[in-house]
Image (cartoon, rainbow over all chains, first blue to last red; front, side, top):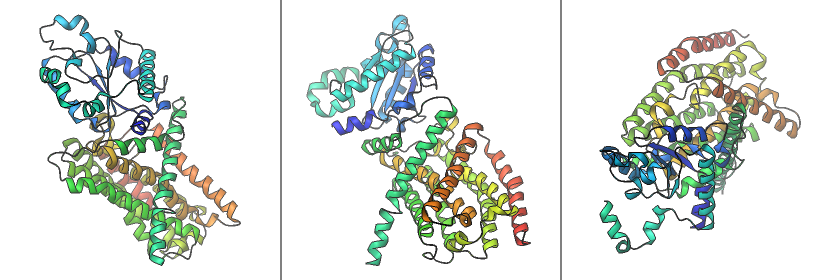
Length: 165
Length: 308
């Protein structure tokens, strides 16, 4: 288990999913990956295929149609993986929460491990969040939710899972 | 006894383990120099090893409708071929009498296999983007193989032998005009064989999002990455043996030093080309290789034939 976490945290390949966002968070995510901040120092690289990814970066609110695609995409990522919600939208929907096509907060149907609040969060905030996530994983304070599913019995999770399915 | 030694050589030195470690260090050099070109710090020395280790703990996803047997066998094919190619090269370098007549031909075939593995794997996955990447890989291979084989003829003609050991000890072809021309052709073909920019259309990240390898995850992807890293180490070694072989003489430490420097220059050239050029379209690549590059290779072969 510790070995798994150590191997995972030293080489994080991120995949960027923008769900009907206003694009500000996406620009900040790309900023964080530019040579100026040089995330490759920590082994963090952007990949083009969800099959190569270890971290799914979710930004924006998902409308009803985008939510279906987001769930499909999450089903395709190989375990173990992490999901990070970038910006305030994946948390609460912010100003879009009264919109006619607003479904539910993505955290209702995706196992989001950590949120980076802000509208949009600065690249420094994103990097600080990633560092905190890595530290949490190594100290055992944070267990990836994709790994929790295997340990928690099916009955214990069933009510919540049935509600959001 | 002899059989077990060969298996040991295949698995440890100069086979799989040695080539894998050397290849991953080469890919670190590639990433570090790329970082310097972009004025950033770049990854730590062990980053390629971390990447491979991480892929081995990841889940292996197989596409539902793909040809799963071929999908999982293809990476093994590429890895085995490049290991064998590196082994033949290193046996020649360690002892120029150790190899057999015609090993250059075997080597050319073995070095085709990694590209073939990418094609087989991409078509077996039945992903539309992967098959597009696979078809580009086919076209690219058809384009660069002709000038590459033509250029490899130059050292063969000059040495009058098709055995790597003889090519290694004969006068270095780069000291003659046809040799220099053939080396330039080989460097262009090497760039395409390693599918590095400007010839990385099979894996074009922006249009094909990972291209030929899009469906791979976990250990099979690790094998493909390892194969690519090992090719990055082996291809410059091949050019070193073929074109600079005669320069490697004197005491062992001097040979090692000159050999390493020349190899590093070839690798650095590849990295600089990759960082300073944009990706070309597949038709432009075919036109480039069948046009000017093949012409230069033909001129080089003719001059070598005339004894320049």
